Figure 1: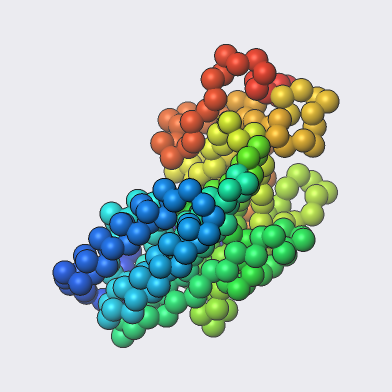
Figure 2: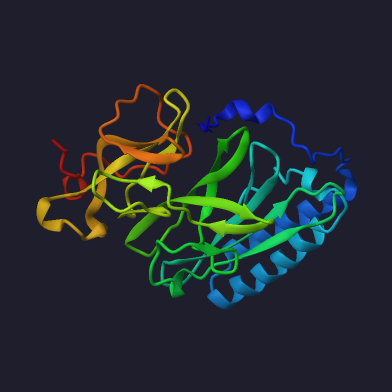
Length: 298
C-alpha cells in the first residue's frame, strides 16, 4: 500500500546512516559559509553577487568533501536551505540569488548518503530560462530551479517511490511563484518531474505544478499534518477581467489540496482547514487595500 509520509518518519534511521563527530573543521567551514553568504546577498551588483556566489559554491563543495559531512547539519546557515529527506537518504541545498531586474537565479545540489561517508554530490543547474515547457521531465543538469522548504516521501511497499518537493520560485518584480516538484532517483541519478499530479476531471496529468501570484501577496503551500494532504491557497484574479494576468492574482481565502490516491496526487477543491497558518508563509499585503483584494470565490 502506498502512503504519504508525515513528520512521523523523522525518527526513522536510514540504512546508510553513520556516526560523525562534527568537529572544529566543519564548524570553521560553516562560519566561512555564513560570512560569504551574508556578503553575497548584500552586494549591490549582479557581477559582484555572482563572483561571491562562486566562492560560496567552492567553499561548500570543499566542506562536503570531508569524510562523513552528510551528518553535519549546517543549521546556522540561514540564507541557504538545507533540507534532508525524512528517510535520511539524501539532502538538498538550495538558494536563490537576486538579479538586478527583480528576478532570481537558483543554485543548489543534492548530497546522497553513502555507506562509507564519501561525497556523492549532484549539482543542480538552473535552466529555467531555456525550459520552454515547464511540464517537462528533466534532470539535475536541466533543473527548474527553486528554493525548497519541504520534502515529502511517498512510499510503495515500504520504500520511497518518489518525493514531493515544495518550493519557492520567485519570478520577477511583479509576480512570485511556488512549485510542487516531484523528485525520484534512477540509479542515484536525479529525475525531476513525474506524471502523478491529477487536476480536475478531464485535465491533463502534470509532472509538476506551478503557481503564480502578485508579489505583494503570499501563498500557503504546505503539508497539512491533520489531513495528510498538500494544502494550498486557491489563487484568483482581483476581478474577472484580470483573468490570466498573474500580476493580479492572490488568495481568495479558500483552500484546495492534493491527496494521495493509488500512488497519484489528486486535486481536492474547497478544503476546510482548522489548523493555524503556516509560520513559513510570506506576509500578506494589507487586506484593507481594495486595490489588491481578490474576488471571493463562490
